[in-house]
Length: 431
Image 1 (cartoon, rainbow, N blue to C red):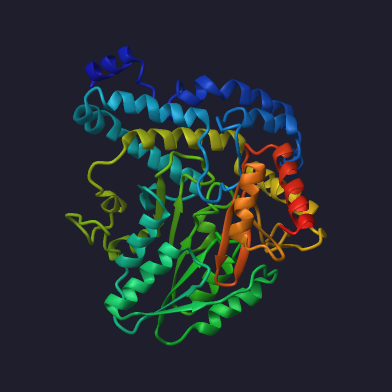
Image 2: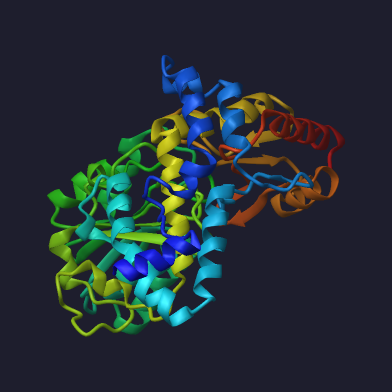
């Protein structure tokens, strides 16, 4: 081991993401510490509007000046420190893949598991590291021991990959998959909880709920749904793809039984990184999606039998956590909500423009849907990009007809001013 450490030190690659000499410490710690001192007397809500503070955060990103990216609900860019970590350890890997991957970088997963657990407020023995929320939720959905006739309640505005997983179980295993329909925004938790409760029958076993609806950004009352479900003896699967590292919460606070997220969204971790949380008592009964030698073991690591994987990405996740902690969860939530409200409040009242998302903090944060009467949303998406170089995503699905706009901490106010101008001009012109 001492020889290995000496060898790596000579390469200048000994420091991991959680060492005192991490890339974050080298690139950002000093400037963010200075920015922290300038605002430490302010509340997160006050800091949300402090452009001097956020300009330091913005400079850590390398986003293109040739377009305005407002589709962070799909995938977010990583700050420079995360990119450099992946590149650094990818170069190292390629100097001797089988040695550096399995003998060196593979040792970084346990410290990463511990840091993710701290960020999630969870036990590290409940955290599995994988590639995205779809992989996590497919593991849970196909791993649950359900039999023909057992019922699952979901929503028609859950994420398509997860709905399709339940539909496949219905086709193959003859479970019954029931889906609720909501017309968001809804500013009444009890209305939402009551809809799930009304759908329960004696055969219901599981409720699947999305923490933040990806189409329009509605924050769902997960804890209240879980409380109701548990009183009825049901389990709850929670999709946290658009909530983790954005909303200020700890997973156990939700009291769900299963939780999954993509780390390449609001954590700004490398693209293709995800996390799964399973309540410890449930781990033995969930079958791994990919075969493992001890499929009924109580060890969360049985879900990480993925074969060859990207160890450089795991180092990048660690640096993304460092960046997240330097900002703070609550500050980040308030800033992204501030950015959403900054543009959305300006377009309220423009003729033909309608928001599809609540502006109340209890029901939304960063994602907001908007449409212009007479213009299909996918056409509006194209107009925004072709005329104004604003990248969004147009959604025409179920009862949603809206362009989804999602800023992030690197988004600048002049970019949102341009969005407001674009919406006003398009609405006035009719197309």
